[in-house]
Image (cartoon, rainbow, N blue to C red; front, side, top):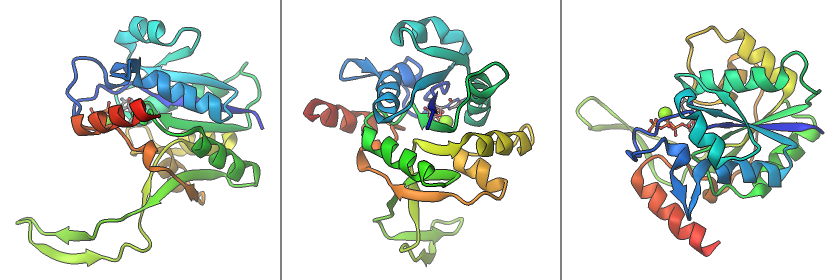
Length: 224
Ligand code: CTP
Ligand code: MG
């Protein structure tokens, strides 16, 4: 199966609050985005394209020598849409599967990528890595008073890389009206009525959102 990887790296990282775009922030001396590209390649992506903030192209090119970059958009949905057009458009080599990964998940083990690819090879059209919810999960009202508890047995936390049959993902993005923003690509295909299969995720694929997440990742990266 010919799989291409897309890394969404065009965000600014407001919640992390670094003085660099989040994807360029170093983890054990290497930018987050470089870790994410390596994971996709090690897990089986034949090529990788990275959506970057257009005004920071030069720095991303220096951080990712030889990697194809495309201009991302103002939202994650727009960034993935742009990268998808670049890897599957007219004149592009034939691609069976697309893996979409967050630059913000640098320590994702290649095994997760491999599990996603295996599920695609077995016939799934859309695949996401997931983990169970371990904390008690509740609903609160406007005053912060707990109004309900959510049974967590059927809840899952969704990670990346998410894998798709190429046509399925292209058709779903084509069907998504401009301006509709969803937080991940599985939501885009689900909006098109496509069933999304789950495989086992990994705690190490955690997303770096705030400074504490980066501090934790530094400890893990040193041990790895
Ligand atoms: N992303 C993107 N294009 C955007 C916004 C986000 O490619 N316009 C990417 C980010 O670079 C990140 C992934 O989507 O790898 C997940 O987004 P998130 O963790 O929210 O990153 P940021 O949007 O950069 O962070 P924040 O929301 O704190 O500003
Ligand atoms: Mg964001």
